[in-house]
Length: 220
Image (cartoon, rainbow, N blue to C red; front, side, top):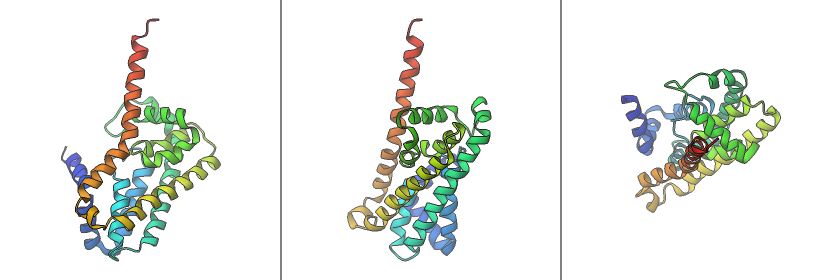
């Protein structure tokens, strides 16, 4: 439970925590951010890690010279591409086995089922669109691997999605994150980014629940 509180606090106050990490670790912050983005996109057991808000705040911090924004963007795009590639590979070789297993503390079949529904609606473009939807972002490459999507097609969507996601949020923070109006309301903006990001997933979850209920109630 304490770990959950720590994660929530880190996400809700990511501007303060990331600034502190940058001041404490200097250039090692590149490796820390690389690892967070890689794990958030590459491991189905870490969908709780920050993504959109992390990129935005990192871009805002880069304005002050603590990080080179061009190097930052290049590294995070690389982390996102590699993360999805690893996740695809895990899904391809272990996906069916994990899907047959019951829920555990680190793996929820419900998340997998929601992502599969997302695929049913959007097809291969899910790899790109999912970049902007937390949790679905983590499970999309896993499902692509499990469904035996051609790696060539997956790789193309993966690269495009990573470039769009990292560039939009990081440069968004770089160019707008330090405006006085944004700085004075940064906490609320971060919460807003989180809410807007998870909204598609929440809608998909509601549809999933309603669909399950209707199937149960429909007479045979």
